[in-house]
Length: 107
Image (cartoon, rainbow, N blue to C red; front, top):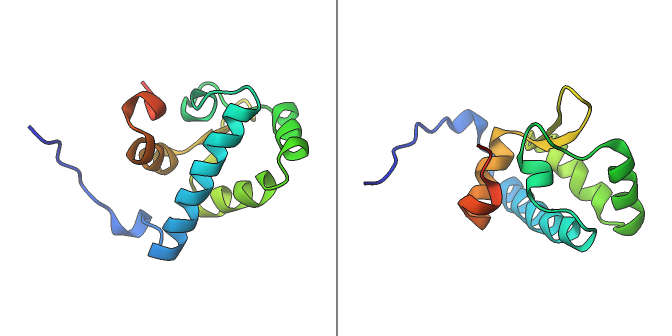
């Protein structure tokens, strides 16, 4: 049985913006891995990356700043109540679509 989704087009980025967002999400997944993190570092709302970890990513991966900006502008990331960098529902949905349930499971 296939799951049915209610789709809200007002929350969907344009095709070019979505392609750019997907590229950044893919690149971020790789950068996280290369810097000793796992995807759950940003897919689980109660986890997230703190400012120190973000500073290290900025230093180790010069592309991080540009991708972070794309993610923030698209609404795919936010800072949780603890000030940690995490994916929003949109970001988790796209990450799930790209990498599968195990990679982006937020439960």
